[in-house]
Amino acid sequence: MRAQLLLDEKIPILLNIAALISELLKSGEHRSFQYCSIKMAQSVFVVWDYVIMAATMIASVAIGLYFRFSGGKQKTNEEYLLADRNMSIFPVAVSLMASFMSAITLLGVSAENYSYGMQFVVINLSYGIATPIASRLYLPVFFGLQKTSTYEYLELRFGAQIRMLASLTYTLQMVLYNGIVLYAPAIVLEAVTGLDRLVSILVVGLVCTFYSTLGGMKAVLFTDLLQSFLMFAAVFSVVVFSSVQLGGFTKIFTIAKEGGRLDFSNFSFDPTERNTWWSLNFGGFITYLSLYAVNHTQVQRLLTVSTLSRSQQCLWWSWPVLSLLSVITCISGLGIYAVYKDCDPYTAKQISAIDQLMPYYVVDAMRSVPGLAGLFVAGIFSASLSTISAACNALAAVTLTDYVSRWCKISESSIPWLTKLAACAYGLVFLGLAFLAEYLGGILQAALTIFGAVGGPLFAVFTLGMFTTYANERGVSIALVTGMAVTLWISFGGPRPAPVKLPLSVDGCGFNVTEPITAAFKDENYYFYLYRLSYLWVSPIGFVWVMAVGSIISLLWRQQQPWEAEGRHHPDPTLFTPPLAKLLRAKYGDKPTVQCELLKRNGDQE
Image: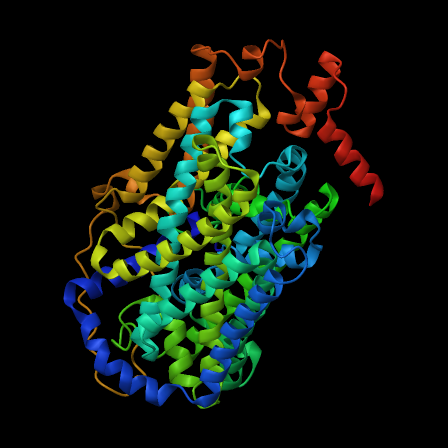
């Protein structure tokens, strides 16, 4: 979906991937893939599959080379990081979706619907509600300031300490997450299709590093366009093929309904239930805003167009693109369920983790059509490429702006080369982490959990800055640290009850299946209450905590604000959300600043 399933929504999916990896590491099973992979690869992939996968990589490299030697040839940071701020709306809108719709999401969302039903699709409504809030209340602030790093805002509003704290948090979470984004799909594909994980990691990692380093933001945006098409094609092919197998598209929903997977009636207020209308909408709302309103990766893309109104249109158009892929992926999970309703591959030990479900279906049912397996793998590769290339470019911007430029004195002519070097370095770091992942064990799960737990608290810091004049650096710094401690505690704590899946059957397998022994039932009161909460509430809890603690400390423990330190009696309205900025200008009689005049002129030109 997320903002997939975006980030906090991804927590159970990511943990399933991490659990699979940890299980393989402990058992030594991954070593047995060597022989198995050779045998399976020969039986699964044909020439057309390799042609499609190779064409995807070659096209991505070609786009990077084109933008390296065309236009301004990436000689300035303005072009390299922000595409000269003259991009058209469509590629930016699609890239906003692709940046966080990783391969983990594509594999996990289908499994989510297979196991728990389609109520999860309701989360897309929250994205629609959150889009106008992000575009009208948050985006104008960033667009007016025109800063390279989103975290520069925090220094202008609060001070250097919170800027560095937030920036380092962002850098750590992105580095850890993207190493796993590169590794997790590779091990899943290897387990099911036999495609060697080292080949997957090397191909995706090196190709991504190459084109994002050479072509800059323009290459990233246009490759995202190509890769998004392949992501749609991969998931859509699963829906079409399962429909043909079942005898019609409507059969998917008929069988899914019989299996209890089309129940959208869960309006329970119980926060311990996995997916309800309230958890999906509140959790999805906060998670979406933490990504599309204040996350540097997304804000950087929204600054690549020429005017505020065009930037807002990018955000508006990204929502239907995101929701369309989300809905198709959900339906693919139902289609796979309809095919395997009488012989669940996971229970039958055909796969070792539920996230292998979609690759297993492709290998089991779709390999009779030459090229379909290759199209699917190209789609999975594309999902990884789009996420990792976004991270390379975004982290290069943050590194040069928030760290290098602050700590070192560098000439203007050196900045573009250092930025490219940073982008290349991050790509190689992701590659190194992917290779080290098999030796890290439990650290993998920690990395994924950290990424999902910091979104809500960071979003609250920006919200306190833009929506209040009383919040100070001391208050938001303490609130951020304690807020992340709370969300990480909830995410890591245990023991926690296993989620209750909808019924699955192995009666129609045609071979003997030893069903797993069901663990002894324990009353839910046996588990600590916070460990029973739905994963969807983690981000809202972090948001509310930081808003409350940050407000209380700021009001009780006063601190000099940046504008007071500069000798001014009131804050700069451009640092606040438009409604509050309007009130401040009316109160203090301020004239619009240069940034406001720029936005007004750009709007008139539209």
